[in-house]
Amino acid sequence: MKPILIIGLKGQVAWELHRCLLPFGKIVTLGRASNPPLDLARPDTFIPIIRQINPRLIVNAAAYTAVDKAEEEYELAEKINAIAPGILSEEAKKLGAGLIHYSTDYVFAGDADRPYREHDPLAPQCIYGHSKLAGEEAIRASGADHWILRTAWVYGARGNNFLLTMLRLMRERERIGVVADQTGSPTWSRLIAQVTAQMLAHVRLELHENPGTYHLTCLGETSWYGFASDIRNQAIACGLLPQAAAMVEPIATTDYPTPARRPAYSVLDTLRLTETFRIRPPHWKQALALCLEDLASCQQPV
Image (tube, rainbow, N blue to C red; front, side, top):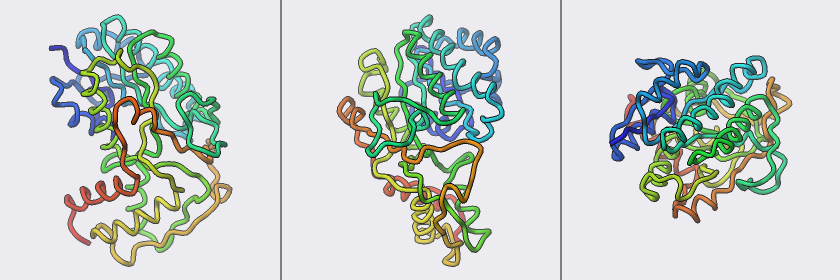
C-alpha cells in the first residue's frame, strides 16, 4: 500500500499528525531536517523525492509562519506558502494522490461581526496572509483532489507558540501585557490532527468524496488577553505554574505595534465541517485544559 507523506517533520501540527495518522498505514514524515531533507523553498529538490515516495496522500503541514518577518522576507514566504503548495498539488494530481493543506484565518480582513464562513470574501492584510491565500488559489487551480483546512491561533506542547511563550513569561516576570482587542479561537495542534484523521476515516482516504475548503478550529472565541488569563488560571490549578505567577494585564494593539497587521476579528465558522463530516470540535477552554493536563503529566510539579 502506498504511504502517506507528511511534510513538516518538527512542526507542532506535523508532530501530532504522525501519531494520529498511523492507523491508516505507513507514514513518511519529511522536512528540512529529515534525511533526505525536504525544503519547500527548493522545488527542484523536493519534486524527485515526492515522485520516489509515490504517496497516496500528501499532507502539507509545513509553512513559513514568521508573520512579522514575512514583511521583509516576502520572497521566501512566497516560495514556501504560495508556490510550493501549487507544485505539491500538481504532483499529487500526476500521482493520483490527494492533498491536505493547512491555511489560516489571516486570509480574511478581520473586520467581520460574525464568524467567517468558507466562501466569505478574502482580503488578507499582511504579506503572510497574502502568501497563504496565493497557496490556496494555486491548489484549487491544479485540479487535484484536495482539502484546504483553515485554522487559527494554533498552540501545543511543542514548537514556538503562544501557550509555551506565556508559560515561560509567567515564570520569569511579575506582570505581562497582552493584547485584548484581537478576537479569535485558540486551537490545539492535537485537535487539528485528530479532526484530520476523523475526516479521512469518514471518506476512507478518498478526498474526492468531499473536496474543498473547511474551517477547523476549536469552538468559542476570546482575545489574546482572555486566552493568556485562562492559561494562567488553568496552569496554576494543574501545578504547571506557582500561585505567584505573573499577572496578566490587557493592552491595546496600538500599545504593541508589529510590522505585520493582524486581523482584529478572525473567528472561523466550523458549521460546514460539522455538517459534512459529523465532527463537532470542542470549546477552546476544554481543549486548553486537556493540553495543560498533558503538559503537567510530563513535568515536575512547581
